Length: 582
Ligand code: NFE
Ligand code: MG
Image (cartoon, rainbow, N blue to C red; front, side):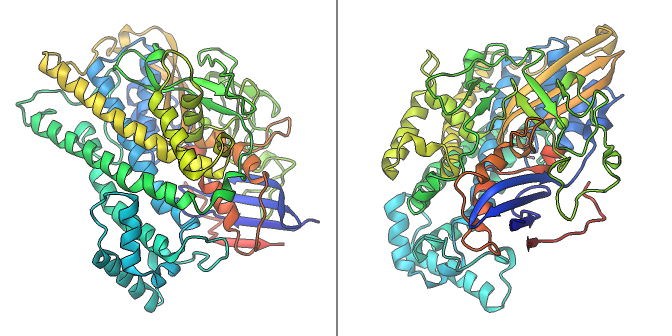
């Protein structure tokens, strides 16, 4: 039998993910992605009041804290034909935008950077040379030799006490780390700075939604009224705080995140040839630029569409309201469908039956995955039968390839100039490095768009329009006996949909298909892998199977969230970090 490398759990992600790689010498021949945690939010929602669904659905995840609340209210609004007022739409855009920027910066520094940055190497950096490096890249003020010397002292104290704390268990000294000590020190300094910065950014949610994580939503608009002179409303003081926060986001992205990404990428260009995988991409599209109706997709910042087989010249139309375009399969999951386990179900008719005991009575996770049968708590979503990747790379490719009247010149410019800076061809986008860079570039685009939404909101309010709530259809007695709707959005990790079926004023069925399910799902009945699996099978060699940093690089480039993807941890497994070679 071929050697099998097992990484379980993958750390520096949200949720519980196991990767098994079947080796062919040093190459990964087959990779299997398994979500080992099951949750029951879809089931918990059945029978409840649709107006409350957001509060339960939002608990799907504590990372993308607000997106499930938003997708949920959108599904109910769709079912009941409610268009929220422009002010509510603009404020929702800003809340989603802040989530993107918060999430992407946190992912880059706190979840992904240590795949590329060797913390221990930063101890041998010269603080003066680090300062010169930082100042050559950007005008970010924290860049003096004294500042970097202080950061270095802090890291040294960690190391000398033998307690690396948050930096414990890295593969420090692995030959795959290529950055010079000064670049490592600069990146670690920014890692620490980003911790404080993200606390500030989270305040935007508290201002508009009462708190973070898990801000408040309401079907039909916003929970807060706008009244510039009232203490209990969105008032002028709070709006000026929002303006400051938008500036803070823009600054950190432009002066720290973007230059760091480009500088680090310059040392890892070989990762522009690894980890592509499927070459198929899907975007639901989102963020109505003028705060109008969601039915006007031409107004979206991120376009709706698909790209198949890397064909950027041929954007495929996507009809999200077609009955058949999206289906979920479970032939390789630990679920059972009443209709048979080879069936594909559209989410309105979706089923979440936790009957894995029918599959041989073995309780997952197995000591070794049974890859011929079910091996994950994730389902396998498919678009028009295609296995697709969703997320920042999909969005940036759609923006880049868009030649329509709604094309986005800034996106094209950003991608071209970044590729030129790195001396890389367009094909380099289809890779582990491309995925990580796409996340950075879209943060810049979203940060800039935030100002536009803010300005429009202020103009509306100054013009006398302070409406934030559409009262129509709030009374269930006015609802049809049966209604169904879907809430679509782009979440930081990609295309997100919630589907609700309402019967006699209650939820008859509720299904969520989330970004990390699209990306981390297992093989479908045809044996076609999901995006993680395909990416790992693409030109990936392990230098040392006991230190599989290469697996981490590609998996982290997707920013996994398995809490979202499986929508309570199994107390019986109690597994900690385990890297097995058998
Ligand atoms: Ni839990 Fe999520 C995002 C959603 S993941 S983080 O972004 O929806 O798939
Ligand atoms: Mg689901």
